[in-house]
Length: 154
Image 1 (cartoon, rainbow, N blue to C red):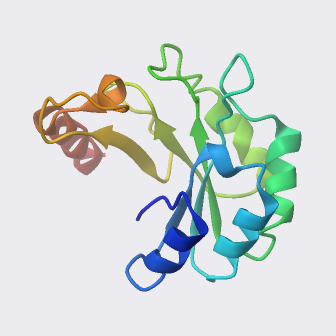
Image 2 (image 1 turned 30 degrees about the vertical axis):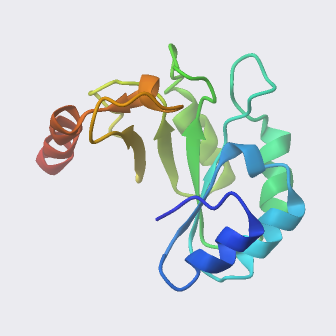
């Protein structure tokens, strides 16, 4: 999957990605949501929000976003839009089930332990130790492998 950040990227990814992931930043952009929905592919919708102190979108913001993609195959991804995320508020995962959609996690922590009540996991990882915008929330490959092994054991 890939996260498009422009309309051009939405169209570029159409032939090569079976799933679109919409970043929390685009939750309140109806035209962007509509354009992704027009592709008729599953959507992972990240529901963080940088303007709120807790880093999470409100229920009303989520409902509004979903109103622009009503017929899409959507999985909500719990997210706390903080880099790094100190308190991941994993309890919100169960609260999001009220939308009657599958719920996953877009995790901005370096936690190896992950909640067991999710259907999708998005984690950041880096192949080397270069500094970039995601380096403080990204795992190196050997740590990421621990998560993969944990998922396989479940």
